[in-house]
Length: 169
Length: 149
Image (cartoon, rainbow over all chains, first blue to last red; front, side, top):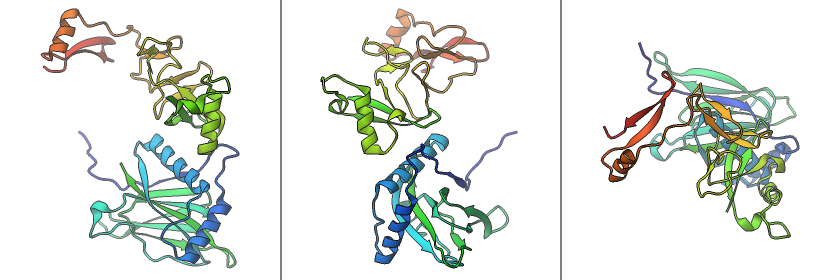
């Protein structure tokens, strides 16, 4: 008897734990998110903190799961209280070959935030896997999955989320 | 050219980077690991003590160019740094293999693989055969195999 896996939808999640004294400067990232949104810019501002975060994620995922990630696009979003995002999809269905492989969401500063990832199984379409997104934690999943973000944060606060789109090799 | 392994606090090798010789020289003009660590710390924002120099020419406790082996083996992603014995360990090749601290390499109980005979070597060179010894974990012995058969 044997088993063969033809394809899988894997979701990776975890915490970003750099060495003591080298923690991610989340305040600076949150500020960059606001700048990025205010300017309606295409390019997220490059910073040392962003580079440290991106390098940490890529190296640790490669170490643990043995695949390399190359960042294709970076953006940041500040969500208002009770705001639910539109359904998000980070591939172009008409050009999958040039589309990204993975989407990573990192909680810069979040409170009561949930990511709903839509997927199909053998029998049902449109199933939902809900995962909490917390501060300094990440969720990585295939970019071919549609997802949306639900925020239940307090009225006077914002949820800051970094999105990094990766190509995998 | 010098090579440094970037390690985690759990001593796992995350990455290996290459550094120009000039970035590893101290005031006296000699290669100094701490100078390379300082350079990498200032350019990569990763603690100094988590950058460990490794030798490109050292494999399994042997130096390919006849020099002095340095820290067991050239580090690779997923290797483990042993700070007590100053050795980079690769993954255990087979469950029965054990660490030889002195040479900085993994070794089976049956000893290292036998040398090929002169005839086998000449056949390999002539490309008529491709003889090599492969470890047989079940039989705990080295099996001679011709990969071209």
